Structures are given as structure tokens and as C-alpha cells.
Image (cartoon, rainbow, N blue to C red):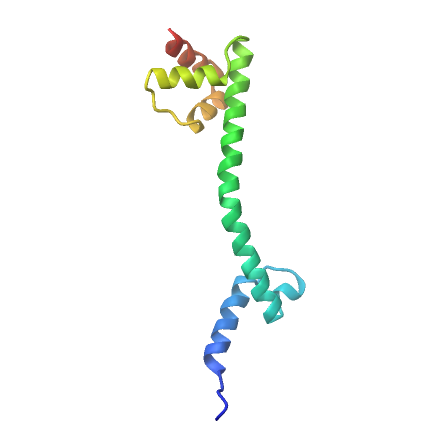
Length: 117
């Protein structure tokens, strides 16, 4: 059986992987085998951390809303605010009240007062 010479196709595949791993340090950007391993590892990490990023932002927003609501009213908390939002059927996700809490705390107070009454 004759030998297969995989010139162009193999080189194209390797250069594609090298371009992906160009910013990696040391052998991770130079050697083909370690480059492919690091590419697979990087893609796994990005896939996993996409969900983690959403989770951590949600935790941050909840913490910010809770801090502002507790600061102004000792008895009220985040859970009471969200419960009142659902009772009034106001569709606000947690990102918007968190941004309001940072930029204008009085505005979040007036929103919570209007919901409670």
C-alpha cells in the first residue's frame, strides 16, 4: 500500500489550531499535541464558565437589591420585594432593580413603596 502524504490538509488543520492558541504561553502555543489539548481544555472551560457567569451575576444583583432594601427599611428584605413584585404582576428581572439600586437609591425606595401600598 502506498504512503499517504497529508501535506496541505494537515497543515491547514494545524495552523487553525495554532491561530486559536496563539496567545497561550510556552509550549501550549508551539507544540501541536499540547496545543490541541489546551484548545480542548479552553473550550471546556468557556462552556462551563458561561453558566457560572450567569449565576454569579444573578447573585451579585440579588445582593445589591437586598442591601439597598435593608438599608432603607429594616424590616423589609429582598424576598419581600420580589414577592410583592410577583403579586402586582410586574415583570422586572433582577438586573434592572440592581442597576437602579446603584445609580439612584431613592428611586428604588419609591418603587418598593408603590408596590407595597
